[in-house]
Length: 271
Image (tube, rainbow, N blue to C red; front, side, top):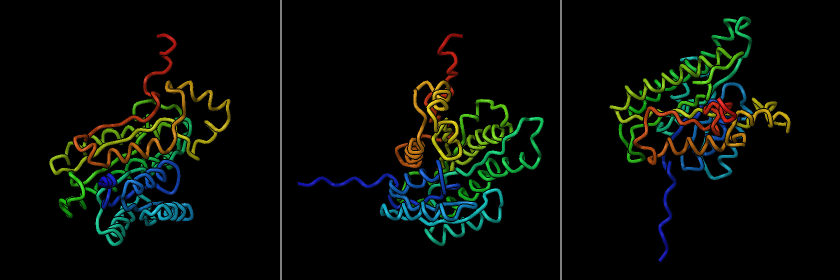
C-alpha cells in the first residue's frame, strides 16, 4: 500500500516578495515557490534579473510573475497589488525584503541619502504591509492556511546593533522592528500574523568584498560565533517556516538568523 505524499507547506498560496531580483529576496522567492506558493517577484530597476528569477522558478515547475514597483512610492505599491490580484487572484503572504544602503559618516550624511534609505527600507514596508492587510481583510478566510494572512519583515541584526557609518540604515531597521511589533499587536485580532527575520552576514552580491577572499572572510568570522558566513538559503528556509502553518502560534517575533552575531561575540574572549 503506497503512502500518501504530503502536500507542500505553502500549496495554493500566493506571495509577494519585494526586492526579489537578487540576493536574499531572490532566494526567499525561490524557497516560497519550492514550498508551493505562486510568487510575485518584485523589482525596482533590474528587470533582466527579475525575469531570470521568474524563469528559474518556472523551470523548477513553480509559478511566478515579475512586477516592477518602487516600494517607497504609494501609487506604485497600489499598482503592484492590483497586478498581483489580476495575476493570482489574491495574496496570502507578503515578504517585505526590498532595502538598500547609502553609507556615509554621520557628519557627511546628506538628507537625500537619509530620505532614500528611510523611504525604501521603512516607508516601503509600511506601504506594502498596509496594502497586504487590507487585501487579507477584503478577501477573508480561505482553506489554504489557518491564518488570514502572513506578513514577514526582513530586517537586520542592525535593528539592535549600532553601526557607525550607517546611521540611516540602522535607523530604518530599528524602525522596522517596532513597526513589525505594532502591526502584529494590532492585526492579531483579525488572524493576521506579522513577524520579522533579521539576517546577519549573508553571502550576497551587495557585500561581496566582506567575504570573497580568505583574509576578508577571516575578519568577518570574528563577529560570527558559529564559524561560517550565512547563505541566502538560510533566510529562505526561515521565511518558509514563518509563512507556513508550522509557525501558526508565532506573531510579533523577530527571528535572528545570524550565526550568533547578536551574542556580543567579543565576550567569548573575556569581559
